[in-house]
Image (tube, rainbow, N blue to C red; front, side, top):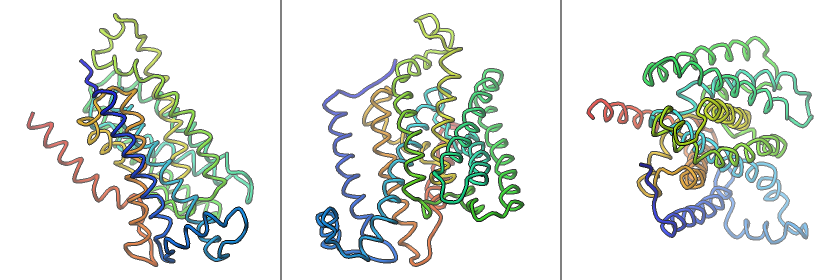
Length: 336
């Protein structure tokens, strides 16, 4: 049976989380190598339309900080949604886009897309090619998963992910183009180079993908009964599962094109929120979207402030927490 919290309780959690997210985003705008005071942020926000803001503050906030903070929120929300959906689809708390190889497959497409994109052009190519790579990998993974057990499927995903990451690294080093992000982008991810153009291109793909996954939520929830039992209650699992994992691949592709390969967000956030909002995806998806946005906004703020003026890759921050968390999950599964 699928558990869910009461509607007022869920609304309180989501509403509180959204309020906390807005506060954290404002704080993130102020922090970095160039610290901006709250008064300057208010002056910029109120004087932006009248061109009365400080030029230096306007340049930092509008051109650098605001697209980066918005990108962190969108990236975190997308990764958390993907994690919740994959865990429901494959019926295991260990499912994560990074661990299953989706991110690495999308990274191959993103590297190719950046390589063929003209300088100054609207960067839709890396988003579309990354989405196509992720979707194709997802569709193939769903077929492979139907022929093997869950644990083997996860181990195979990790192996394929490392292989695809190696091929991406070879491509990046051989091409050596200023249009292609560094290898660090495809290994640990970063939002340092986020622009309004890449943010817009990724958002155009991510928002419809998230809505589609939310729409498929009730069908995915039925998979907890098992494929055969779900079919008996009216769900065509042979059609729904490939469709869902393909949409997941599209969302992962857009997220990789936006911020590179950032792992463990989709593993941690759904697991932590289920005790509070329940496991029904129609509720869990919006809750994890807010929770994932909070996690990545905080992680990205730490990435550019802890060692300022140097910057720590975003994926290192999430892996520092996610790695021990994964180990704890594995030990916990073995003990039960």
